[in-house]
Length: 101
Image (cartoon, rainbow, N blue to C red):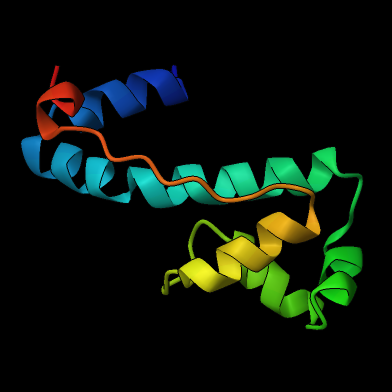
């Protein structure tokens, strides 16, 4: 019995308009969290080291980076995180018409 690859599974799942709508709604949060992790790793920091810089606990950093977290981080938290890894936050607004192309 052949199991579908993740790519095949995703393609089939996204064919369902409800699944696709929910996937697209969650996409920015997933992208943000993946980018936070990449920046921390690029800075050569562990979650523990970053937590120390931010005067918080490792569990808070873990929750912030967790793509399955139930809450969204505040902008001020993201700004502090970015600063601790040597970046600043820049926000972009994209017309909806460009997203749906």
